Amino acid sequence: MQTSSIHGMWSSRLAFVLAATGSAVGLGNIWRFPYITSENGGGAFVLVYLVCIFLVGLPVMFSEIVIGRRGRMSPINSLKELSDDAGKTRAWMGLGVLGVIAGFVILSFYSVVAGWTLHYGFLYFKELIGMGQPITDPAETFTGLLANAGELTFWHGLFMLMTVAVVALGVEKGLERAVSILMPMLFVLLLILLGYGIQTGHFMEAVSFLFRPDWSQLSFGMVVTALGQAFFTLSLGMCAIMTYGAYLPSNANIPAVGTTVAISDTVVALIAGLAIFPVVIAFGIDPAGGGAGLIFTSLPLAFAEMPFGIAYGMAFFLLLSVAAWTSSISLMEPATAYLVESTNLSRKGAALCVAAVAWMLGLVSVFSFNLWAEVSIGGRSLMDAKDFVTSEIMLPIGGLLTALFAGWALSSAISREELDNKMPNWAYTAWLWLARVGAPGLILIVMAGRLELF
Ligand code: PFF
Image (tube, rainbow, N blue to C red; front, side, top):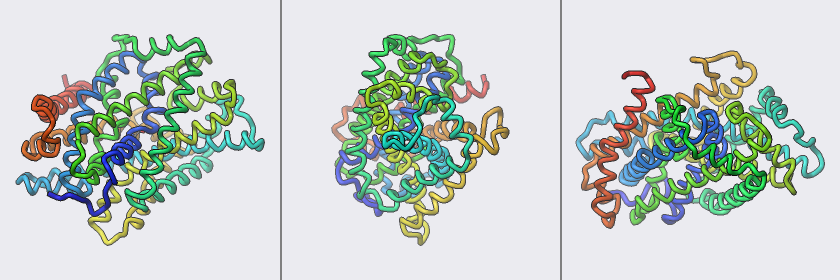
């Protein structure tokens, strides 16, 4: 059993929790969760999403960390070693390959959206120092940005450079420190926004939109979207948490750290929803019509009215960029670790190759808003198609295979040992059967229903 990884190690179990929470908390919570929730009609969607987090997300989270820590290598090679040790087929490496591909595709559009947040941070900064125009018509500002391919490419490129810089330095340096200071700051800003939302007088309407289920909205399509959001927001299904697990000290308690990450992520998403929807309602925006621009077209209206709104707006978007940064690092890490293990490339060279490919792939998303706005695949823009294929197909399949591998291919002696001997028996048995049958079964049923197979 390996006790360390050639790529480095987290300095403590807290460092892992911070890094994994940094990976989980990002645009998925503050940008994607509100707009997907609004498109799916609120309450029923949120409840299904919460069920997916606990019945599917949590067991898959434990499974990823167990596999990663046992293998101590990039996902592809960890799966190879562990399959060999267990006398199972090497075809399991395919899960690692799927994860690496999903990582490329997600990184490529994630970086474009993170570029929007950087751009908004910069707009507020210019306004603050008296060199920019105030955002008087947020919808127009947003449409104007999307129409400008050059601007989008620049911010997408800048964000990708920021990501590659950290990944090139390795796991110990930079990342841990950045996460431990900046993430709590973002949380405080969210709480301030929540306070503003409460005093708009529309807070209870937001609560009821988010938590009162209208079950007529329930469909297999909606459930797959909720499942996809659960995977996306927890960074599961593409071996990112598996990769972080490879750097986890042997004495860390996996159920404790995994649960902490899942709960923190869920709390941030719910607070983001509770902070954003009162604003959306107060300014009469049609929640269902907001689409991917929801936070960019609604929040500036609130910032224009709040005391110190410009400084606040700048801090909010810059910290959101940081949250996106700590997530994009984890999107880049699995492929980078694999290249370091399997080629002669240094970590720097490997990270640069991954970034270059993801940046080029990202141009497809950039152009989907302007030059290629007419192109669609199955009724979706190229941007939406990449998001759909990854979160609603690749991540659930990745999660399914991860749970099956941890539940069936690994011996229960190994998973028991990794999950901590102090874990009560009932809890271990619950995890084991959720990983073996519960989570894969739910994923299969939901996906089959979506494909109208029954
Ligand atoms: N969990 C991140 C978010 O919510 O923004 C996005 C993400 C990161 C997805 C890493 C997948 C991943 F592997």
